[in-house]
Length: 75
Image (cartoon, rainbow, N blue to C red; front, top):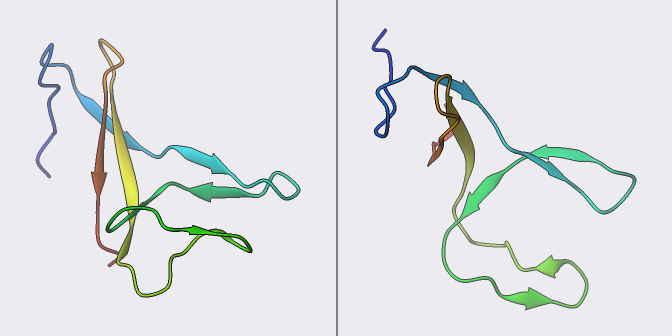
């Protein structure tokens, strides 16, 4: 496997994710990327129906702490 390197310092990047906490009972989710501009909804906060969504993988540099996030299609 190819080791990803930090664009700032050349350190090794380790894979992780950004935790997104829901407003109801502190539910935990993985951050997601959603196609297009947000459209507000009274009932759900934001309309997601018909929009492409992808989980976001975030990589952290072990040396300098830089975070890089990438939207990756589900396998």
